[in-house]
Length: 295
Image (cartoon, rainbow, N blue to C red; front, side):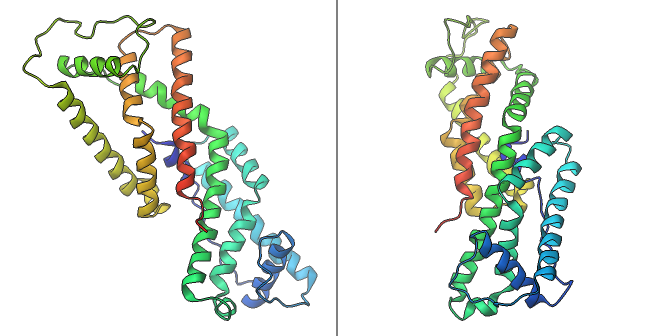
């Protein structure tokens, strides 16, 4: 299963090499553009006289290439259909994604100028914050366009997942969701021990705890070795993992597992899908703070 966070990082935007004219001139053009858009600190000096026409061309080339790269990455990823890709691109434009990408590039290319006023550590922090601001732009754009559709598809996938054949596991899941009031027994009528089997010698609490630990391991492994590895630091991955655990992601999956055995009608399916989307949407939204720049 791809998490929302996994879909988000599918937009892998390559940094653009600036070499069409002398580097210093391109960087000065970018800075001038960023100043006009209130993204550059006045503390850093810039040239007063620039060739306006050449600057316009440099800035336009960078911005056009940034959005073209983003669009190409979206269309290469099968997770996004044309309508969703178009929606994401509109959101990226709306949030001036290319300007933030430009700021990131300028910080990378203007060390010498910045070193006159800042320490190396401060410069690295500014670069890191610029990268994170760029990532936040991707996150918000993708979440806006795919949350309901993608999470609804995840719900359907969970619901159609092969059912447990182990009677003890089925019993423990039903017992757990009932005891923790995770499912409305007034609406869904089912027997916890449907087959009236003897489980006195087995410990459900221990089994659920073991399943939860295994789930946590799989989540951690996914964040380390999945697609997220190209976009998230170890600190960010730990933050995302904690939010999933605090948000009771494991409990949510157990509820859907139990619902999958109950033959929901269309109206019940609609209600439960929306509950799932809302719960998982909250987790995905909270995960955004894991990549928000720290000042």
